[in-house]
Length: 371
Image 1 (spheres, rainbow, N blue to C red):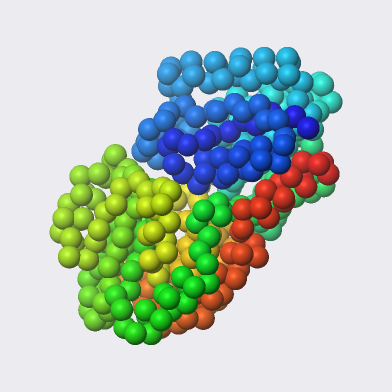
Image 2: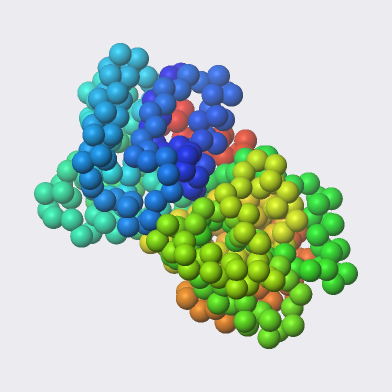
């Protein structure tokens, strides 16, 4: 089977790009021929305001990508067209030719949506823009969403799309799946009163809650908790000066590692006890960092946004905190510390059952075959 695969890939490193890369490599290992079209408009980490904006440079890049993709589809004639479209109108618009070509050649066209920004944007569009998108979705074979949360939202937004919707949770690379000995070792560390290692594993963006995490330090100090915070990710350019000031101010409690991957990332995950992600990012869906944390027996502190409830259970996997409330972040971290043993075991077993790499690849592969 031949597949045309269009979407974002690293660099830069972010959730959708990581998932696309994992899926691309996993399908190739299964012997499928993949014609990949990388649809990034930049290889550098940009401010959130850059995402979805339109510029002459973007227009040139996306025009080239559209021409290249069209040529691949017309010449190679793949059996399946698998698309991970952009969330803005123009981000989605550049995928429409691929959908229509697939329809014309009677190919399977599968659209994979990672979150709800696409839906939020759609509601604000003019009738003309809505008609273009609705027509495109009607010509797709399947619409993949991350969880039941998004099935309900898509069904309310688009008429007669229920039969095309299918759920596929994300997965993680087995590279970041710990073994039970590591989880037991970390449980014993907390029992023995070792330093609690708190991890922020995401790009350091204001909307990801990194500034709120800094502000929670004073509350953590008041509790008397022995802890250390590891920050991992690229710093959002717009707040880089402020973040660097905070890192310097709280150097006694914070270590900044920059962007991490491979063995460095694996080591940090294996030594962390609590993941803190107090995000309120509009495009938040199912953060890969939460699944990677669970796979290492790490308790999770996170906000109740996007599709996080589809993969996270309060008290079982960690604790919710309130958006932009540093005191709530500190309280939830302390709750995780007090209940670490049971949460660590719950998360590790859940990751093996739900997020393991081969199971994720199989879920997508099944959708492709059965569509």
